[in-house]
Structure formats: structure tokens, C-alpha cells
Length: 184
Image (tube, rainbow, N blue to C red; front, side, top):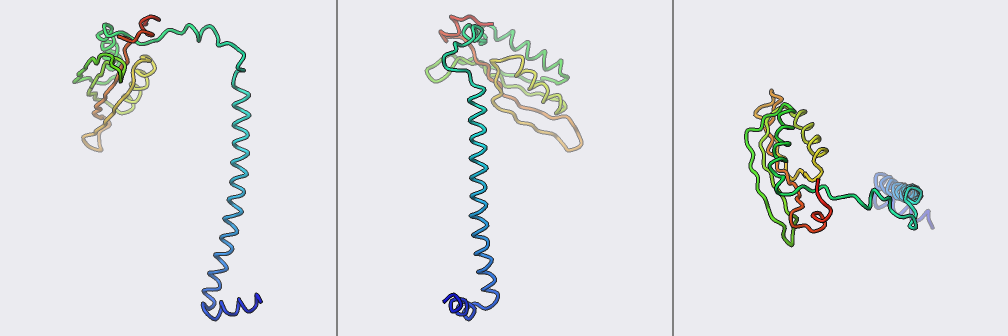
């Protein structure tokens, strides 16, 4: 019976068609086998991740360390904005970048968002120094977040870039938990 089916297939499609059908059949078996192997590897990986998570997580009965329970918020207040801007500017200048322009705006606490200080700056200098500055500021100022970054370079021959940066500093103003715990 199989011999008759092969003869009919050969009569309809010829040698190229038979070879194509054989290749499709082999491909289907290979895909099924690879899928099974992939599922097996995925299952092993998932089990390893679960065992690592269980081993590293503290038990539920253990209380949190005292240092974590008494951790005060590190959000600055709006009245600290001038000092914060001076610290940022001095870090920029110490990093070898120029600060030709800066605008800032205080936004009070609302139902949708925390109180914030938005800082829009234009910085000029070499890209590696700019990258280092961003990393340094994010490490030194925990309430500071990089919201937008746009880089332009006048031509391909120069290392200097002009960066338009929008920072947001989250403030403790109006937020009862931060004000009760104090600020830095």
C-alpha cells in the first residue's frame, strides 16, 4: 500500500516533489524533537531558579532586621532645592562639563503624583564624561531620576556632545510618611 502511495506521489510531482516532501517530513520531526529538548531545558532552568529563590529567601517567620524597619525616607524637601541644584551644578563642573542652561520647576503634591522638582539642563562636553556624570549623580542623589536624555553631536569628528537632560527630584513636601520620618 505504501508502495502505491509513493508511486502516485512520484507520478504527480516527480523527483523534485518527492525530495521536497521528504525534506518537509524530516524538518517536522526535527522541529518536534527540538521543541521537546527546549521544553526539557526550560523545565530544568525553571527548577534551578525556584531552588535558588527558595534557598536565598528568608523564612517567613524571621522578622525584618531593625535597620530595615527604621530606614527613614531620603526624599529632600522643596526648601532644599537650591542646595540640591548647587550640588548638581558643582558635580557637573567637577566632571569637566559645561552647564550653559538650566530651567527648573517645582510641582506640588497631588492625588496623581508626589511633589517634584523638574530640572531641564543643557550640558556640553565629551560623551564619556557625560556618561560618568549621569552615573555619579544617580548614585549621590537617591531622590533624583533621569527622565529624558537627548544627545546631539555637531559632526562626526568631534567627541563633544550636547545633551539635553530632564531630571526629576522627588520631594517629601506634603507626603505625611516622609515628613514624619524626617528627611536627609
